[in-house]
Image (cartoon, rainbow, N blue to C red; front, side, top):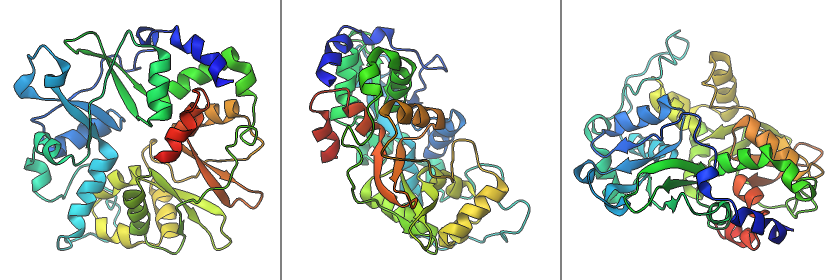
Length: 339
């Protein structure tokens, strides 16, 4: 089925891929502080951006100009790690009306306000390799990288000099495919069970009484972006994601939040209101749903993972954007499974 689509994908140049809604591609400068870089990403509601080496800004090749792609989630977890080994700061009472505070990086260890992004690239703390495609590459090339090799985001460049003209991410690819699902009706109408996406797999999760930091331990150690919170009966009652890390490092009562039972944390953050991109509710699906419908739901919710549940609302497995994209490329499933 996927092989029939590959010829069509191979005929479409990435120069025709929809441009970012923001128009200009956001780029982080290597002389920014960590403080500035995290705020830069948050203000634009994006999770990553290419890092430009300002000392080689005038270079003629992209290999010299760009040193990597800074990932906000990994960087925030890195910052959280650093804070775990420091004395607890003086914290305000959580009932104080200013408890959540404005989303400002305050207070943080001084090093984050002075340390430069270029120093992170040397240790690869939150920085992934810069692996672009030329804009004349094909949609199939991008699908192979996203679906087979699990690339999260692919910068598109226009020729050897390497000016970045667009970013193709797993989520933007899902959006594009969902918008044009009539072009692959046969595949889009297949259920998750039909496509082998209902096979049970281990799900990293925490219980409602466990502290919030247990969720971040799983996120960090397993390289996942979120974990479900389970009630006493094993049913999903909520979701804690790596995006919550940003909220915690910008809140005034960091350590108290980290020690909160997960269920309390979910109630508390729901009560005070969270930024639109941070979701406490776990989005779930069933084995009988079609891949086309699941893609539309994930696209509308702006999520990277959805939980497949049984009739008791207990998680059976996680389905990622990569799992869905893999169904459009022959042999891609093996690449997703290895990651």
